Image (cartoon, rainbow, N blue to C red; front, side):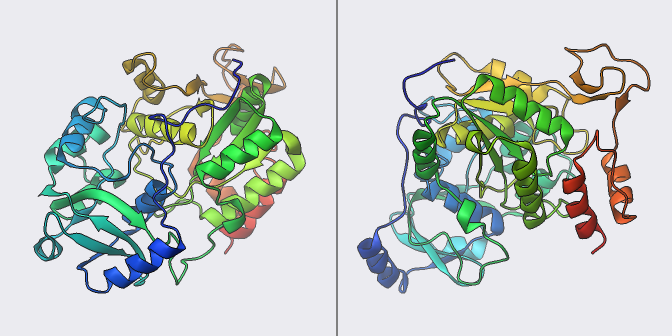
Length: 391
C-alpha cells in the first residue's frame, strides 16, 4: 500500500477537547458552583481518550440515539462505524443533582477537576441492550460485563471541555515521555517520513510470537508503532511499568530504532473481544496508523470468543467504513524442525514440534527464577519479568 500522506482520522477530522489556558481558567472558576460527577477509573481513561482525539469523532459521552445504534448496529446514529458505547454512568444520587441543559464538573477520584460537561441528555442505562451485544455474553464472571453491571443506572451525555487529563495525585507512573496524543504521533510519523505505519496493540509483554508478527508487518510498512494500553486493566494483568521496561529492552536489542516507535495508549480495557478489536483499530487510525495487527483472540478473555472472531468482525463492515487495514495473523510459534517462527499458513503442524507455554506455566517458571525457553521469550525480557514475579 502506498499513499501520499498519512491516513485521515476516523470521521475526517481529529477532535481536540482540551481547553487553552484562558478557557481552562474560566472553566475552573465556573466549576466551583457546579454539581460534581466523580469519575471511575474507566471513565477517567475515556475522558482522556476523548480529550486528545483518540476517540474521534466523539466530542463527549454518547447520547441515547448513539448508544442504541452502537449496541445494535456498531454505528453512531449518523451511520459512522463505532463498536462500543463510550458512556458516563452515574447513580441515582448524582443523577438527582444534574439537569438537562445545565453543566457539571467532572472530577478524578482524588478530587482533581478534569473537565466540565454540557449535560444534553440524561437517560436510563439499558444494560440489557449493551451487555449481550457488546460482550456476546451476560456472564458476570466476564470482567467487562461485571464493570457495566457495577456502573450506575443513568447515563449522562454531552460534549466535554477538558482542563487536564493528569490527576494531581498521579496513581503511579504516567509514562509522560511516551504519552503522545494522536496529533503528536502524526507529527512524529511525518518527521520520520513514514507514510504507512503498522501498530501493535498489547497489554502483555511482547514474546517471540508477537515480535514475529510486528516484524512481518514492518516488511510491508514504513514504520512500526508499538502501542501498549496503559489504562485500566483487570487484576492479575502484568503492571504497565513492568511491561514498559520489557518493551524498551526489546526495542533496544531487537528492533531497528529508526523504524520503530514506542508510545502508550491511555485507554481502559473492556475485554470485549471482536468489538474491541474494531475500536482499537479505529483508535489507531486516529493516531495516524494505516495498518493494524489483529492476532489470535484480540482483546479477549477466558474462552468467551472464538480464536479468530476478532478478525472476522471486520468483514461485517463495508468498504470505506474503516479506512485502516487490519493485518489478520494466525497463531505463531517457534518450530523446532523449521528452526524459526511459523504459523498454520507457513508450516505444517507436527506433533510436539512447536514450543508453546501456557500463561500459568510461564508464571510458575518466572516465580522460580527460571527463564522460559529463548524460542518463547527473549532472555532480556525474561529477566525483567523474573524480577517482577519474585516481588
